[in-house]
Image (cartoon, rainbow, N blue to C red; front, side):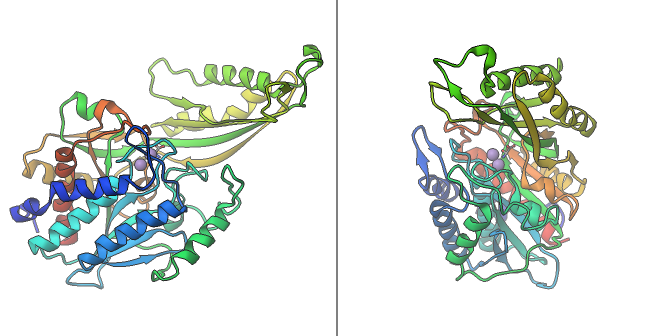
Length: 418
Ligand code: HGY
Ligand code: MN
Ligand code: MN
């Protein structure tokens, strides 16, 4: 199969069907402002997975799950013994997320596979759609647990003790989830796909600003997540002299101020974010005895990621006036560059369909980051309105999503016949 993919395949991708499925999914966990809050391993998550399985069943796909709850829908190839082409993304959302992050890549994979079947496009290799468990890390940190376990990057029980805001352990939530999906056939964790391709919204401003249809993703910058614990002593806000306090909030402010200096980048490439702060006892008239805050650090150059990240502990501890501090690293995703095979297939498909495509890196992390050591990997981006994501107003138009699904369909046909 060359890149001259049958035009009827491209025509078989149905814009309205894809949009309709996305909007039906968006009702599961809908929040004001067209947003979605659908955390992993929840009843809403399971409801969305059952909806997807139903759509897959209707077109003859067979479902299975692995020990991390990663969900697979398989389209059989003419030679079932061949390594499959894997495609998909995640179904969980941020707590105040949008209707497209992750879930579009899953729905686009379904749309592309359905178009292949309706167009009668033969595929030598099987194609497997995957919905990864807990990509966002919103309920249980870190993100990408399902893909990291599948790829052998981390042992499957690595995160069992991670807790959510209600102190539920990830291991317990996963065990409950797997029990509730016990009717779904189980498959071993892991695999050796022939290739992996993920469709995803850009979550940034580039494609819209340059009036492009498609982003051919060349790689993903590195990410490191840390948790900082500051330990002081709670006290009475009215009586405790300020000079005698061990105020964890005040020392947190000193630490973040010092970290801002450490992380300062005049070129604005480095991304340093503190966005989750837990204070105890969290009462307006009790001095804070304990504070926990998160750090999300990103950069495309691993040397910078290592140098700045490894300096965090020393900077935080030097900033302490009255408290003690500890730092734990929760997540390490090294920068990756995609092998040429899949980006080249994406470029061939976009050009063959007369789309305006550009090669670009990803600022967001994705499950694709962990597939790179396993097989040729790539991602297809479509524009994000105003570059906004991880917000209810996240938006990509139906015709833009359809263009992405058409490229995905052509890429799957290309790869599955190699
Ligand atoms: O945080 C990220 O980069 C991804 O969108 N979860
Ligand atoms: Mn995502
Ligand atoms: Mn996201």
